[in-house]
Length: 157
Image (cartoon, helix red, strand yellow):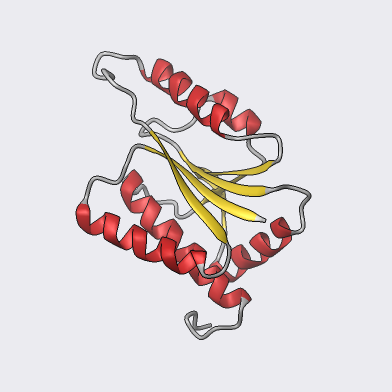
């Protein structure tokens, strides 16, 4: 099984980018992991929100396959405690899929077509975070989950 994080737009903050790289490297010690970055849409200043969502959806849907288990990181998704998230991930590893792909959408969220394609929605918090911050928060949690699964002393509970 492989894991991927699909995100829209690159991380522009250098400090944030360094931390994303750090956690990405840590995760790769446990599993095949990649970050897929879709280019940001251009000329969106006068583009209606729905049109932006549809264009982003096209890019997202082209980047996933039927062999993927698609998990949207969405404010309306199910919230997990870290231990619960580790159980969720262990169960997902048993699915007949090649890859678990976690998706962070653009600033306006996902279109209906992306929701229809998703297998699961999870939320990191009821609070709103920047898309760049979500990347780091998610990667830290993913790393934490692997330390739990492997019985390593990173997580305390």
